Image (cartoon, rainbow, N blue to C red; front, side, top):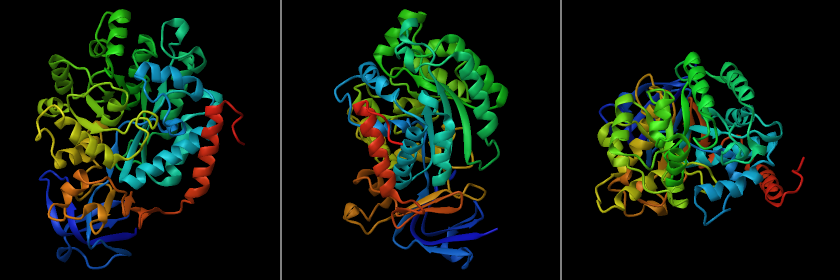
Length: 453
């Protein structure tokens, strides 16, 4: 086993049970697991690799609980549309993707996330045109060395059956379930500190049938994996559910077995007090995506009420076509500011926003081995230098600087005990050819031209 020592951190933000913050802090890692956390003077002085974190704030790696990585290919489209109009504009473009497009877009989005401080990301891939598979984005995550929760999404309810997506992008439900089983059996790593986990994720109430929701839940529970979908994102969705199923979105999914500690939903902007209480009582989690909710005019999610009631809450950057960014630290800042818009300047603190981005995200993904710096936890952590223009005048409160000031990229990122970002660059990634390949695919998709080989 190899050892790694991070020493002399200006401030170590642990997010442990006591929420300790340690000046001149240090971490000692053996292989991929944190062995000791404390003052630099109290930890071993030597290791196989020693990193001097003088002048840095070090904290747990950020956790992204909802994304659509393929959408990096279609940023800044449908700029003035709400969710349904935005989707109907983009579905035909997304239908042009192939396996290479999924792989390249995932690698671009995950690279962005790594640089922003994210060390664990979920992704919701729910359409599979032209031979693409969930395998393509898992390969991208493995090449980058980021911890990854792949959710095998699906759409089965096309326009001809009363759904929103065109028939060209939906799948047969038997084929969906068969591939879900394959994905879980092939990739899911349930052991502690596992790098890849798989969840089942029918896309939304307006793009799959009740049968697929039920069958997905039954399969997930048989295999011991989690469930994920979009829920209560917009008033249009609420109207659709009332007209189609005679129930509000939360009531609808509850009737299908989609509440519980093994379930997390994205958005949940429009929830009643009764529905919030239901989520708290059942341990049903939420991925809060403030930038996307603002971009699509979906509304302001009741994050303060969720947290006060005990609903598990994490952050998601959501798709890069409804956020146009994959920067998780920026999302933490947005979450804090958006909760203040209603008139309470103390609605969310900087510390509260970082809790959502770390230990909160871990809870939503059902993990007790990431999100905090403590003995036995995965060696996933990040460091930001404080001697930068962005943080001038804020050195008296380094934690607040991370959230209140301009969102910056990390200087250091360690995932599973391996350095993945050093001096603000991703280790072992030649990024320029990746950008060029990505832009060529994006241009061809948007122009409806043949994709480059």
